Amino acid sequence: MNKNRFRLLVFFMSLSLLGIILVQLYWVNSSLRSKDEQFKFHVQQILERAAKKLEQQEAYKFLEIYNRYKDSTGNAPTRADLLPLYDRNITKNTRKSIIFSDKIIREYDDVLFDKEKIDYLVGEKKKQVRDTSATIEDIESHEEIDEIEKFKFIGFIKDFRQYNYLESWVTKETVNKLLSSELKENGVDTPFEFAIFNNGLATKIKSDNLKYISGQMYDHPIFTDAEGNGGRYRLLVSFPEKRTYLFSLILGITSLSLVFTTIIIIAYLSAINQLIKQKHISEIKTDFINNMTHEFKTPIATINLALDAIKNPKISEDAERRQRYLQMIRDENKRMHAQVENVLQISKLDKRELEINKEPADLHEMLDNAIEHVHLIIEAEHGTLTRYFEATRTTALLNDVHFTNVLVNILDNAIKYSPDGPVIDIYTENVKDFVLVKISDKGLGMSKNTQKRIFEKFYREHTGDIHNVKGHGLGLAYVKRIIEDHNCHIYVESEKGKGSTFIIKVPLIN
View 1 (cartoon, rainbow, N blue to C red):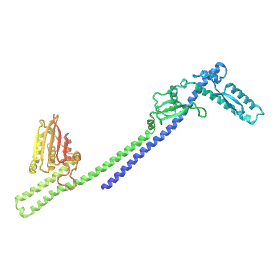
View 2: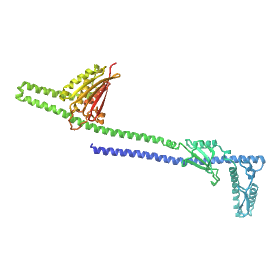
View 3: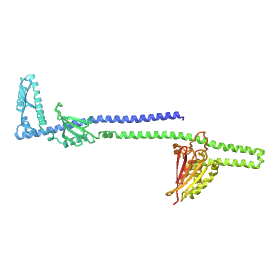
View 4: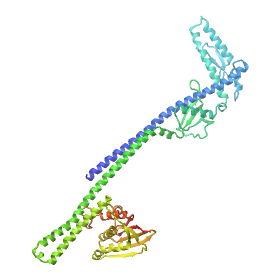
């Protein structure tokens, strides 16, 4: 897959995923708005029922006063009889006039008619209805009797409201219990605060933690007449945890949506990661094949030239030259064998098939042995290697062959990446129950990205057909696996253009 197609695929996959997430967020937001509207409508219905029950309680309280007077006197009370029984009794009455359909102007009190006058009027109207000679107009006027009775009762209630303190018969506990019951019966299970307002001012009938926030309060008029008039009192309710409650209503389906969306995101990221890894593996395998081909090409060419030379009669008669060419063939064959063996060892390490037996060994002796392997190469490159062995305890559980190969690989790496003649320093020191081995060079150094990936299989900082530094990216991968098998740790510190330092932390035998 070429880079443009890969980028296009990632772009459309990302766009689709983003679209799914935005649709889910829009759905959640729409569901919350819908639940909010339903909640508002539901609460208004609850407040309406609560208002009716409060008005019923008001009527019961009035009837209690009314019946108590009637039982004690034997007569139905008039307005003037009831006023002294209220908290704020008023004895002065204001008289006004009303014109009935019979064109008779009659006086009535400020709030309601006097009972005696009402009774007289009602009696007269009933006589007219019973009279067979009554006209249609007289019969129609009979309907006024029910209206007058209704008006009289409304007048009593108005008096009761006007001259009784609301707090004298309604308590916040009563309202709280009423609202709690109504909300519970209607499935609204969330904390609430309430208050009764009188002409826009809060009364003492309110919950302790009520905070008036404009736009977040639900209210309904209470103590109104049949036409809904006279509502100076309003019942206000707020829900501090309303948003949490609304979200809980869609939590189940939202959780499922979130789970499935998360799975899609994880699957998407995993797929992208695998695509990137596969693309990277494809690139490094191509590099590996190119590098291995280059590594084998030179020995094979050398062997062919040596064989052709041996076939030459002049050289075949020269025993010394023939022996030199034969030795050259052996060396090149050994070199190719070492390359193949290195690849096989890495393969066995991956499959956990390589047996590594460890025995107590002196780390300084192993370092000396590894230095002997590269000593001639350093001299040929006109380089220097300096030992700074300061560790006093150096006995560790090691495999002589493989751990020596680890040290040789690191030293060989330092030589290869030092273009102006290798300058290598080796330090050892004890830190608690460990010995630290530091192999430092003054070579090319590494970038931060290379430091993170230097121990990956097939990875090389130089890729493609650049072969100024020979190798196939397996040396340090082999080093890492052997170090881990020895329960050791390896780190690298490097700066581009200033060299690198490999640090090996080896546990000592107690």
